[in-house]
Image 1: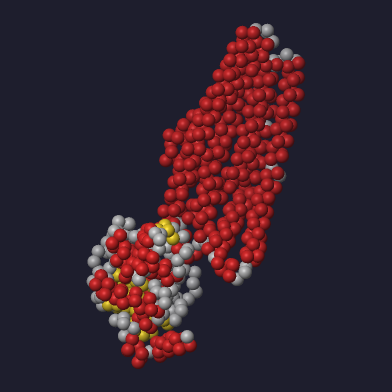
Image 2: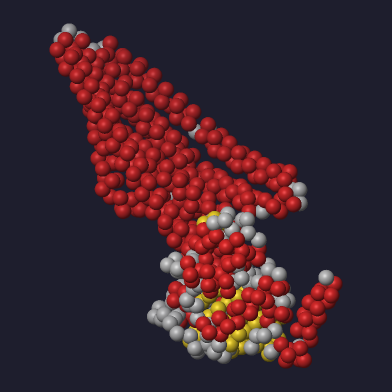
Length: 580
């Protein structure tokens, strides 16, 4: 129940609202407790003694009590819901903020569907608990205590008979929660798995249709859906194994009260009005027990959901600012890798093995190699998307871990290998990192990225809305928009990670020509990862990677003479052109 206590502690931020809900709840309990006494007064002093005035007075006070119950019930429900909405709001912001700050290594190993389920379904379970189940439990406990005292004062023998249902029902509900808490967590995880299949199909619908896999995907989704239904039916079965016993207990207690109380009325030790009032209080005893019972599954679900939410909130941020980190303000252009070794979390082999090199100011560095040779890994270590396992990455002699993350990454211009665009206009995507950029600035970088002609040919130009993830644009068009977006930033170091892989050779050459002057004027150092020899042959230096090792470096001409692997890559590209 520790996650539940954490949820309850979060109500401190809504102290006044929570107190208001509790006060309304207490006043509602008082109004409920007074109603049977009004019945007793009206019956014993009015009907039995044939006093019409007392009957009318008791009826009038019952109307007042009914109005008060309605007002206080609305007050406690409204205020409890307001507090629950606040808790859910804070949790959503908290978990989203944490997701933004979590390192790449966390996202590499976490399913997007799991995170989505925690932000949506799990937080909704917590909100329902705070807004409904919690007030039911507190109201039930308060009502039980108040009514128990009244019953003991009225007739302690009948009270003891009535109150036997409380510990028995409490034991049944505690047993229910203990036995089924794992089941409720399993349901949330199965819901996440179901969402994962849905998300994959929405993202990959073209692949599904291209390979005629619609029926197979339906089968996969249906299988998981069946599993979720079975798990939910297990909870219903568990409920049916518990709550009928509670109802049976309440019915047996009702019979015992009527039998014993009726005997006392016949013997003259108990009035009819007192028996009617006692029977009304019996309903007030049974009602909170049933409400607490119905709240038990919601509490178990909320506990499982809170545990899953706090797993993300408490996740360790592996990449963060060191104590005393300084801002990255100037770049001389000397970037050094000193015996760098790196292994991705969960991997069995090292992605980089003792990689060492140093750049010069204004140098254009190309990184080349076969697939999975470690090219992109080098690019990921400069902005500290990951931290090295051994060695150091330095800028102008200072370890990148000595800089604040925000200042370091804000001075790095990066075009990733996988292009990501957001829903909105083309202009909004280009100014993503610089929202105050003018249209003239946007057009300038678009021309450099060789995308201006395409954009201006569209009916709405730069205000054209692109679909989710850039649907409606070709891979090359998305890459060029991403390049324009990066060129608009205030970068000191430029990293182009295979940024022209989706465009044709002619367009790639045009982009490279337009970038050359800009890179040498603005960037202190530029890194280009590319597969095409034509893209990197004009680089000041080429780093040749193979299986995580830096096996050669030099100009195009030098590597042609000294590196068999470089020659083999060049030969393979030439042969491909001949084949075409």
